[in-house]
Image (cartoon, rainbow, N blue to C red):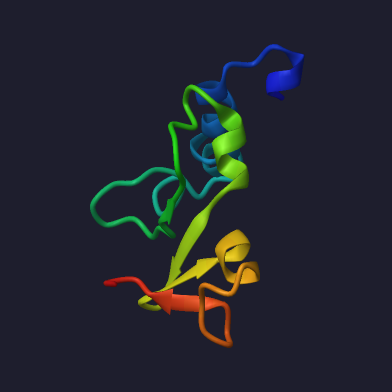
Length: 86
């Protein structure tokens, strides 16, 4: 989408809040607000300025971080994960 001129911020919104609104689930999903369900991700950099930051995501899943690139370098346990709290 950014390749066609959309700003990184608008591309992120179109994949989250706008989609939730479109399919009628915005009361439960789509934005980070109290009372809503959410999966949190972290990435190096600011994806609102550089959308390619979304290609380097750390995913926190049930108290564990999954580092897809980092795990391939031998920095994680046999499951490709490390504890979120350190």
